[in-house]
Image (cartoon, rainbow, N blue to C red; front, top):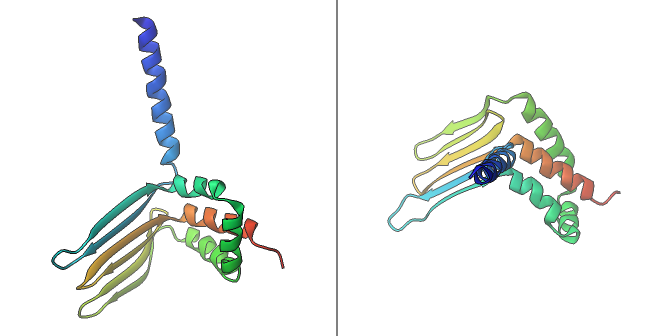
Length: 145
């Protein structure tokens, strides 16, 4: 019985540590709701670590092609992410008209993009650390000129 308790404790501790590691970067959250009869409602949450780890699993030829296509934007992305880190809780854009509302901000180390219109509602939350991981990985993979 004591051996069974030790095994259960070991498995429980392993699960807790694994969960803590998986969610240490946060969660990427995408919510899309179409505001009409029969409209789709998509709510997608994924641990940000999955994106960072996924960059090491993707075949190099695909990453090289993506980096080649984005290479002209990579320096701007690097600076964008670097500056975003300086403003962990800031509002950048808040535009409202008769039918639409767009809000772009950072909160608790995540960039938030919210778009609300008559047709649909979109909410996106991405940890800034994940943006930096993607930027760094693509830059390391980009062809040198």
